[in-house]
Image 1: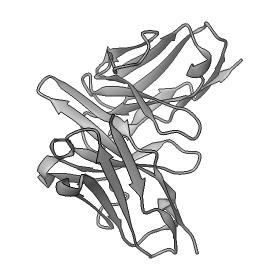
Image 2: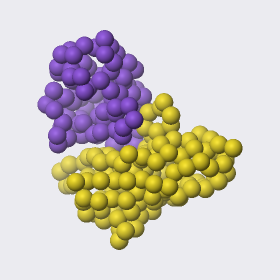
Image 3: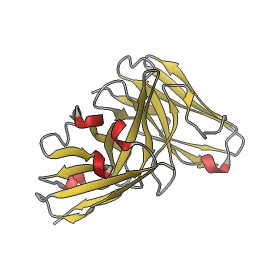
Length: 122
Length: 107
């Protein structure tokens, strides 16, 4: 069974840093591209970052570019999000989400974790 | 960034009703459109990918259609477990963007 589990959220002051982790199981993690998606309280989801297999390509939303860094460790079947210079507007539930891409099919965000809550407040 | 305009923002319906939710993209996204269901306290769940392909395990009462800029999610015969919020997602180009959501409530 495919399973994604996020951790590392918590309460942090504005300007602070946090590192989120997402551990995968039930599928060959190394060949899948992965994403971070966040959802502020009462709002819709917002895609914020993507990393391809083998870490060849990374993308960021404008709202986090230059402050957040996505990375992965295939040996540990883990995805990370280093978040620096945090702001109140970064307060959200952060999800990791998998993409499935084949030559004939693209499924974005076909598996999700349950999320880890980040609260940025003084 | 491609803007996704979703409507209605909310609707009330009864069990057994046919429900239609629409999403309009600010530019041509071919068929690069997915639909997600989110129940309170849960993560979004992929229902439909590439406009009309049903994800494994999704009931056949869900269907998607459209192309270019206009897309539709239809639920034919609403079930109690379908009362939730639905989001479209364009995965044509980064930054991927979601619609604003459509909350389906019990009438």
